[in-house]
Length: 85
Image 1 (tube, rainbow, N blue to C red):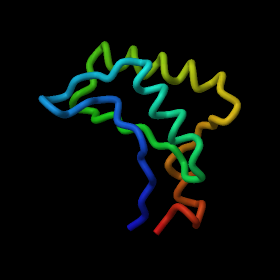
Image 2 (image 1 turned 180 degrees about the horizontal axis):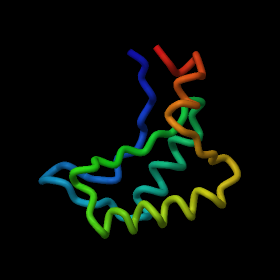
Image 3 (image 1 turned 45 degrees about the horizontal axis):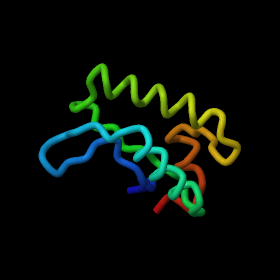
Image 4 (image 1 turned 30 degrees about the horizontal axis):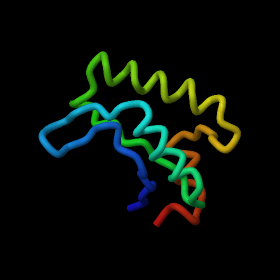
């Protein structure tokens, strides 16, 4: 079974799902982008609500303007043998 690295979770789970602030997510994403592996963002579809989708949209708009960020499908990532097991 192949795996895709996930470096950032949009929720803090210390006392149930709590949406992380944008600044915290941006810091975690910037740290992950400095690594050679793809930077996956974990969403937890059952915990997603309107605020989470809004935060995700903000992250996507911000990432679209970052030169080191690129967007890929799962299929694209699975085809890269260095990331697939």
